[in-house]
Length: 243
Image 1 (cartoon, rainbow, N blue to C red):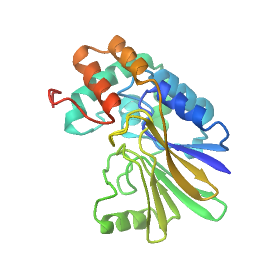
Image 2: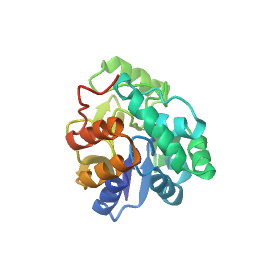
Image 3: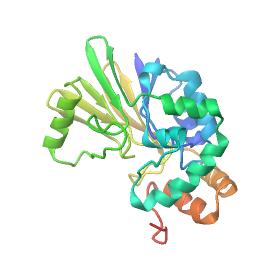
């Protein structure tokens, strides 16, 4: 049995297509939030999720909630103006049903596969939409999060756009990184593959230039060019980006 674990697609349809093409024989899909914002193809990504991802294996990200509920995504300072501009564009591309789908996504889910329990959220169990915790944060912080999640066998999270797989006590914590906007200095789409309980991190190259052209068509230069820079470099914002 193989499961494709995805997070932070961010309206990047070519990146998502590249990942799906790289893993054509999976048995299921897990999506850890942020289908939309930053990218120029929100409608395509939401439509794909609605048609293909089981309702009990997807959770809401901060940008999903922001677009669906017309709220502030509370993203980091360097990205705030870029996120606000693209949120306006994204809202204009989605109909009421798509926004309702994003607004209604659960903030966390607990499921089982065989005898193993899985806790899913976009950020961290104690703050499922907005919390921010990386692998290098103190181990005690992660142990607290494992306790909050009910000590499952697996915790699946996204949000940081940086992939990792790590055992802490008896829980395997998995962050697949970002499909649509990696920020770990590797511009390829990042994802994870679960295979009979084993998890591996993988990458898929895609046509970044094509996405850049679409960004330029849908956003002013002061928004499109910094976001294109992030895609080309795997996470580096130009110094001149307004904070």
